[in-house]
Image 1 (tube, one colour):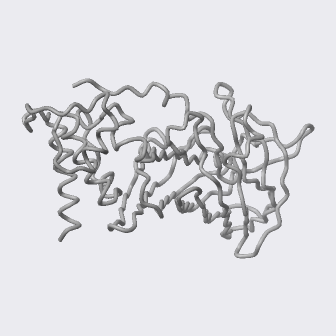
Image 2 (tube, rainbow, N blue to C red; image 1 turned 180 degrees about the vertical axis):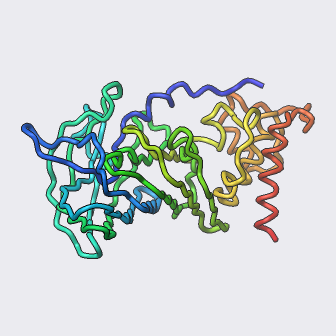
Image 3 (cartoon, one colour; image 1 turned 90 degrees about the vertical axis):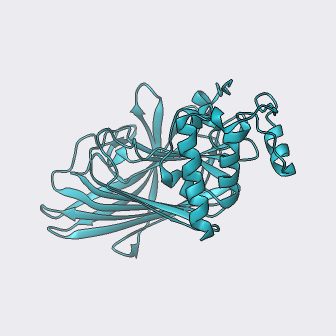
Length: 336
C-alpha cells in the first residue's frame, strides 16, 4: 500500500512561541542575562504543570515548591518568554492575564526585555522576562504559582496543526528538579492529540507514572517524573491536529502498519475519534464502507483511499492487528 507523505511537517512547526520554567536572572549592560550556573542550595522539590486545552487557546497553571537547604537569600526570578528570533513581534501566541504569587501572596512583576539565545544553532531566543524578587528563607520551602492564557502557536501552511510548547530546561539554574507532574486536560471534541513528546523529555529519563482519566465527554492524563536531568534545550511538546484536515495516524505516514501505539493514546480519544481510527486501518486497505459518513470522510483523501472489492482483513500486518485490538478494547471498556 502506498504511503502518504507529509513533507512540510518537519519545518512548518518551527514558527511558535514557547513558555518556560522560572529561572534566575541578573542585570548586565544591554539587558538581562540568563544565569548559566546553578544554585548550590535551592531545589525545585516539586513542579506541577496543569495545561487546560480549549478550542482556540490554552491555559497553564504552574505550582512550584522550592526548598532552600542553605542560608536565606533573595533572588530575582524571571519567567522567560521565548520565540524564534525573527518572529518576536508577531501577535500569535501572546501571553494574556499573566499572574504570579509567592507563598499565596500576589506578586507584582516587571517585564524586562532580553535578547538571549537559548541554543546557538536553533536561533531560539528569550526576548523578555516576567521578573519578580523572591526571598528564599533558610531551610524553608517557598511556593510559587504562575498562571496565564495563550493562543495556540500555528504553522503558516494552514494544515490544522497546533503546538503547545514548554521549555523545562530554563530550570537548570536550580540545584535539582526533583519531581515533575504534568496534567493535560482536553476541553474540546474535534481535535486529535497528535503527538505528546513526554516520553522523550530528557534522554534517560522515563515517566515513573502515567495515569489517564477519560470518559466519552472528557479526557485528561497525568505524567510524573523524578529527578530530571535537564539540559538548556529540554522541552515538553504537544502537537494537536484538526480532524477536518487529518486522520489519526496520517501525520506519521500511516504509522499503524509499523508502530504499535501505547494504550493511553487510544484512551485519550473521543468515541468518534476511536471509530475513525479503527476504520482508518480498513480504509488504508481499500475497504468499501457502507456508512455514508465514513465514505465521505475517507473519500476526501482520494489520492490514497481506493475502495476495492478485493478487501480482506488478511491484508493487515501484525502491528495493524495489535492497534486494532487496542482500539476495540478501549471501545469495549467504554461500552460496559
